[in-house]
Length: 125
Image (cartoon, rainbow, N blue to C red; front, side, top):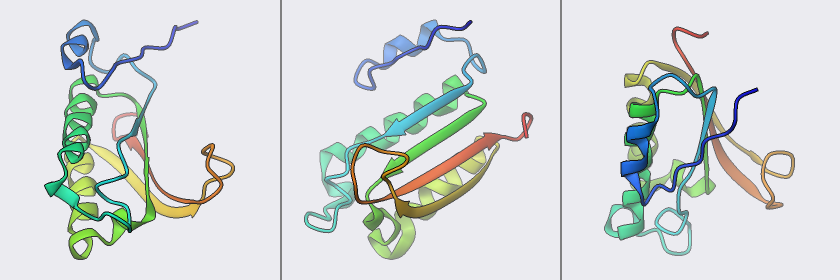
């Protein structure tokens, strides 16, 4: 079988060793602090750059499927514009997507609501 790859998002040079389309699934769980209800600093928080870097990794690696997760408040940031940005970025990479807020107990170690996005590359679906 295949062995899983793991990339530290802070070490983007590691993606040079990965062949595009080689991954079955990639999961992107970026820092929630910029998007949480309590801080809600959005793009003003330097940690929001991890989301942008993660989208670059997804574009380069081009996995067959993707899963993203974060706090539910990301759906409301800047009147929904952050969510629209994420959806458009992923769709421009030729993924069909669905996203929703749901109880995370079955999908995440936390027992609270989380936002999830699932995507399948168009040539795989």
